Image (cartoon, rainbow, N blue to C red; front, side):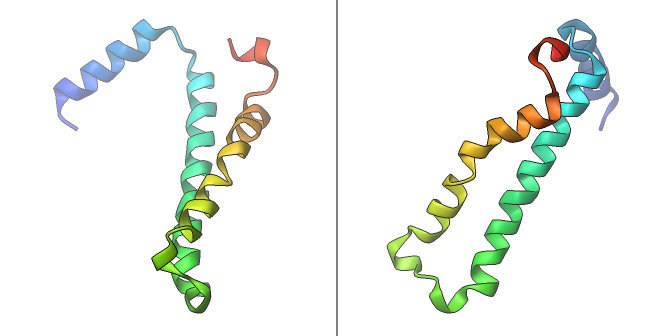
Length: 86
């Protein structure tokens, strides 16, 4: 990163008023979501190649869409009580 980007990031985080602890919790949640998504994408073509029907285009979409409902639960389990995260 160049110096300008670093200064801009520092300014943003100071001005936003978010506590470092809250930001860390949210980063952890997004890292886990990204890991889950990546494992789904690699799992389908490698382990389930014989059953994968790319022509129908439903296999990958259904599997990825099914994790969306769990994002709130995952975020809540890492953020704790709503009053403590503000």
